[in-house]
Image (cartoon, rainbow, N blue to C red):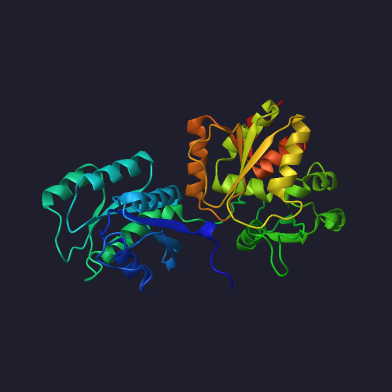
Length: 405
């Protein structure tokens, strides 16, 4: 059994100044020693990630971070790494030590609120001191949810678990949404090419998650390779409700799938589930305006060793150069690395982000929107480049107006 994929975990970040009790709280919540605890300021250097089950939320990831008041050259690097964690969070727990609330806490709260992030304030180390009643009243009057906590005595920890559950229950990932696309009892055909990036005994995450969702909702699944699709469709007594393909096989699958059978790709399903399908569909329109010398940023959520016909480094650049007739330049980033300044690029193309939480991808979409750089998705961009954009997005009524001539 494999652990829950990262993309299906809610992320809770512990933030605050040095020695605010972040590591001790993570250990207390996890029920084991995950982070080093010491009175020496700056003990936590890199973010510490702890995956756990949080009932009834399910799979979560707690993230311990370095103090945001760290100093010096090394301290600045620790702060930079902490700030890179914030866009990944579904909830930030701002810890203030021993009843202390000063400029560092006020500035951090303002920054988190400015990002639109869900925040809770925890006054840690309550075994040493409690916050003044007037301070609590002021924060609560400003709409902040405050808890008084002690990792040593356990004070406030049950209340914290309850409060976190209430804040995040509605955000709990439920998997790829196929509601309205494949009703219970109907069949979806999943076209899953087997390539060198899918080792023996494994399918890639988008395929696994879509298959699991079909099983969960009582739908049927027929899994085939692209060269077997035509025969499989001919053998069905009833047309499938949906054909889902790996984007790389779009052209052959579109040719073999009858026009009256809805067709899309795994990547487009994830664009809808994890990101903003409308933004990605609108961003694909920027492809028509690309000219020689334009730079394209290709972002992949997971790090992997690129193969000979790698989708991000070979196929997408080739298809876009062909459809535009332009000499385009491509840059690539992987994992949580994403540039703060997007001005060098005319377009961002993002993978399906099956290993990301929704918060991180939506933060990237919003960053592109603020900076005026269009963003699209692997599957959406490929469908555009191959001339099957309207058909690939036709199953999704929320973007129907963008498909009209």
